[in-house]
Length: 295
Image (cartoon, rainbow, N blue to C red; front, side, top):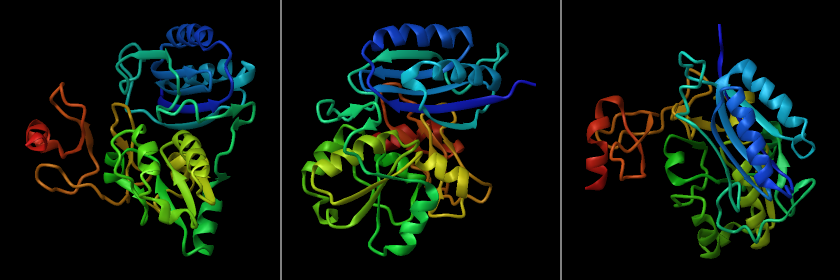
């Protein structure tokens, strides 16, 4: 029986002709009946694809045959299902685009990328090393590299969560001086799959943060190793039809429904198509969540 999966991956690597790569990637995904979103730039590739497991494995094998993508950082998770054509139910369509940045921090001129990845970023730590550092350093700070709403349903314990609604606001937040008091402390940046931390940690290093680390592979890889027995609490927000995922049946419920206050880790798009907000909302309050939020 076909197995639905979601593939999350990225690589920071110089791409001299991202438009040519875009055409190749679109043709490959269409041939394999994959849906999702791929962003390309002269800095590399960032993708999330859903589909049948064997098709995703073939996609990954072919993509890694292209020299610059041999070192793709890859994470797997379970998809919610497949339609009658074995296409992913988690993604409505396939989008393959070229942008100035593969993560939109609004600072393409600041990011330097070479054959080894981001230049001048934080020290990479695997999940085990993060736990070791946390046990050794009482002054350690976890710094959330995601949008504010994502942290409403899950975050590292006692993490600093910047008040940003999109990644472009991080540069302004750092330049405001609001986090200058952390410049002398060890800081571990974290995000969903690790890609946003690649950029964020380099921005922090460039602004004088002395001891910056990044969780390699992000929350997704940490959850794979430790589930809910480590320093992570709650559910992980994901940018697809699943809305969120948990690493065990015993995951803490941190979110509260925007309407009724019921504990829930359920995240949904606002029902008003003109509204771009993401809301924590229980199943019973879908219809009224946006109206209350707007008020």
